[in-house]
Length: 177
Length: 182
Figure 1: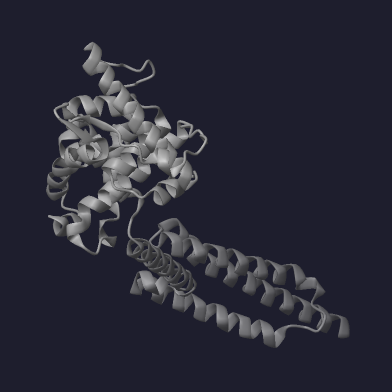
Figure 2: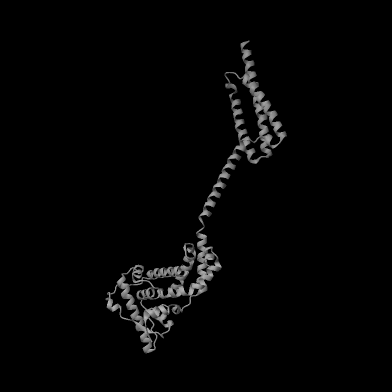
């Protein structure tokens, strides 16, 4: 029986689906692509959280770093042990007393003792360097030894300055007599 | 099932895929006339559908929505393959109304086979108009041709199909186009 082609196609539409794909292969491709897309298209909130996390970590690192730098400046021998602190304090006391004496006796023309004053400055610079080392290594025996030695050397130099001043004064008296 | 797919449930996605894969594959293969291309279309279409399923308001419309994706993707890939739509001389309305008939006993498998033997442009237009219900104006817009060319090409596609079927009925030989890919 003859039938109009268009009408026939409409009526038989579903029966025309006669071919089969390779369903499992195609599904595998779909699954892989969906998995890849999921990886690539991470939700926006993920990036926001990641950015906040990164900011917090950087800020914490910066603050901790800054704080520890400041702590470095204030660490002293007394922070390590009371005994060392007392030793340092007593040496410091002697240095201060000697320096007060030097200040009182220091002549207007101090060219004769200038090299000793320069040595004091050098010792102070060395002390500052070792104090940094002490902060980095905390309980480092050689550094502790050098720091205590600094006071002793400073006392020696101050004694020498006082001696030189005394010599200079005696010399001046002899000339006057 | 659609609701589960919206949540990204892989099992629901697979069940939905199994339900629609054969029908969608046949749409794609009739449009592309290439099994491997049709499978690529099928894959891309399901990936797009599952990725954008949140946009689907009416869950009952999934099948139609998916089919539109398959058709659009098939047209895209055949365009890449440079399907040629001949701007044939338009036929008058009288000529276009000449009835094209076939034997209603002819098997759907053979019809499917002969649709695939049609030249690329004519085949796409026949599938879109006679099987997928597109209007000539819509076909023209989709394929970038005029409405009258779509009408004329559709009429010629029907005539070619009728001739191939008649030839087989008369000679018992199945027509196989040399360039047919699958």
